[in-house]
Image 1 (tube, rainbow, N blue to C red):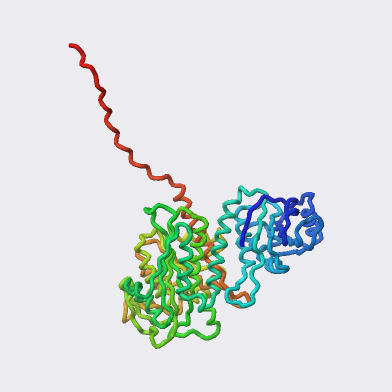
Image 2: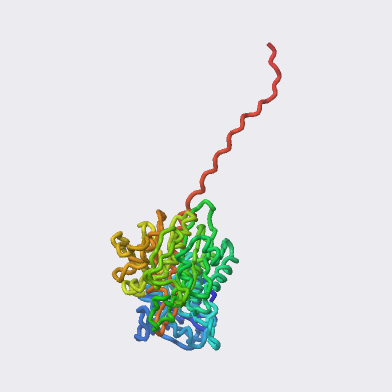
Length: 507
């Protein structure tokens, strides 16, 4: 979907020819003398429209308004959260009548962050999955014009939000695809397509290369399936080669049966979402390709299936990770940490400034935080604070959980350097403590998105989180580096003055 930004007031918005005109109305609306202002003021006075976020009033063929349909939507105090809620409530209006072109106009002054929230929410509300449907109706809405009183103050936020929305949609699309339509090989094709854009390179490794690297934990997870594993390496070059990159590591289990520790049959279909960490890395790189920030980023995706078969790894098996540490696999359904640990070891070769892994890792995190906030674990306070700040700004929040060493006691094994599970208590924390064993001194953060990466029930589908959080973090990380003065070039040595020829003075 295409977004445009334009200077609009309510009086000029009324003249815009479109299928749907959306007017966002905040508390304390001050009407003018134009037709739309009169409509809004009258609806508020009559009690037909409330400015509380989420309240909507549809109108049809309003006199002197060019749009065929008009929807008035309350956005509360006009802050980003209220705007997001107000726009999300328009899902029905966006599908009714199959509008192709819409205008979204703010009825008063607006902050840049609120404009970004409107773009994100509108993109989310209008998304339609069609990839594996034979007679599905594609998204009708093709273009949205966002109107504000002053475009100069919101232009940067608008363009960033459009790029992030594109990345979120890519992550949602691949998260939603069934396991037979989103194999490790197909994910690698997506990564290669991203590498066709400026400043992005891609390298894809198969079983032979991964074996040569010594990724015994990753290979163990993949050995029970016929689908070949893929280890995907993406690089975005936005800054000087001397600048240490930030490495993003995505869990890419394209279908998780649990392996020999087989999952219950109910809702097992949702285990196609177990690669949403990988999908989020792909989405971030899509946004980077459009924004081109001055930063270096590496994306690593360990992609495979976890299936039961005669070749599958068994409970009690001991494998050797790329780091050389041995792991007793007590539960084959705790496979995500096994593919991530080798990817984390591989990440160290880039000498990064920070490593962030993203994974649908534990049901325990769903119990702890539900579907509102992603779980955050970090070895570095500054990194944790930056991620939390980015999450709040992007309305893609996370919550920091502890990493006390005492939590690692349950990972002790009589037969290997560690076990891959530590029991039911504090399951999300013990999983993070397992991963921490494969990160040396580099600042590291782990995002457990098991509760936020997808929704169940009638709204079943991928959310595209935490693409917004990650892109916002990278943009924040790039800003100070872009503002920093370039290192001074060493001064060239001064040349000795050339001697001038002179006539000998007479004695």
